[in-house]
Image (cartoon, rainbow, N blue to C red):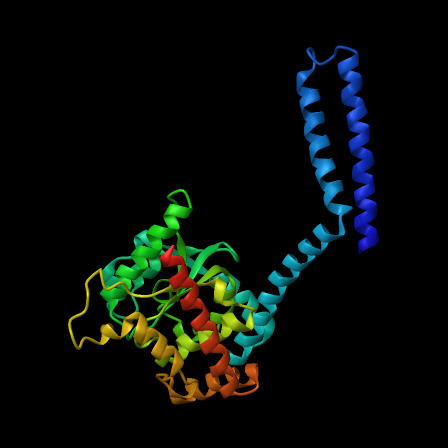
Length: 317
C-alpha cells in the first residue's frame, strides 16, 4: 500500500511540474490575456496535484488518514456486533436495516411537552427525517423517568451552545421518541448500537434516574466499546438557575455534589429494565464486553467522573 501511495505521489508531482511549465509557457508567449480561463484551470490543477503529491509522499499524513478511515470502519463493525448480540439477528441484516432506518430530528422542532412522557407519538416521528451515517450531530442519551421540564431547559442550553459554535445552525439529534418508529420499537431498539455509531457526538443528560436505567447504561456501554472517551462525551447537567426544584423534589438530586455521589455509588446490577428477560440479555452483553460486571462498573465510574470534571472545567472558563 505504501508503494502505491508513493507511485501516485510521484505521478502527481510530475503532473504538477508539467502543468507548471505549461503555465510558464503561456505567460512567456503572452497568451494569458487571450486565454485567461485556460490559465486559471491550469493553476487549479497545479494546486490540486501538488497538494495530493505532498499528502501521498508524506508517511505521517498517510498514516493519519489510514487511522481515521479504520476508526470509522471499526466503529461500524463494533456497533453491528453488539447489535447482533442484543437482538439475536444476522450481521448483514442488522447493518442494512439500521442504516435504512436511521433518522434525525432538528432540535428546534422539539417542544417541552414532547419530553413529558415516553409514550409513542406519530406526530413527532413524522417531524424526523431519514439521515445518513455520520451526519447526525448528536445522540441524546437520557432517561424518561427524569423531569421533562428540567431536561428541556438543559437541552435548550446545549442547543444554544451548539448554535453559537456552528454559525447559528440548528443541531440534528437522534432522540428515541422521535427517531424510532412507533410501529416497530422492539426491533429498532436492537439496532441502537448502529444508531449511536452514526452520530458525531454522544450527549449524556445526567439526571437522577439516568444511572438506574439499564438501557441508558447500555448506551454508554456501546459508546465505550466503540472507543469513546471522556472528552468525547457532552455532559449535560440540570441548571438550578432555570426552574430550581423545590425542597424534597427528586430533581434536587441533580446538584453537582449529588451527581458525583450517584456516579461513585453506581452498580450496573442495580440498574432496572422493564422486562426481566431483556435485562438479563443486556447484562450478559455488558459482562461479555468487559470480562465482568465489576470491571465495567469501575471503568464507567472513571469515565463519567472524568467527563463531569471536564464539563466543570469548561463551565469555569
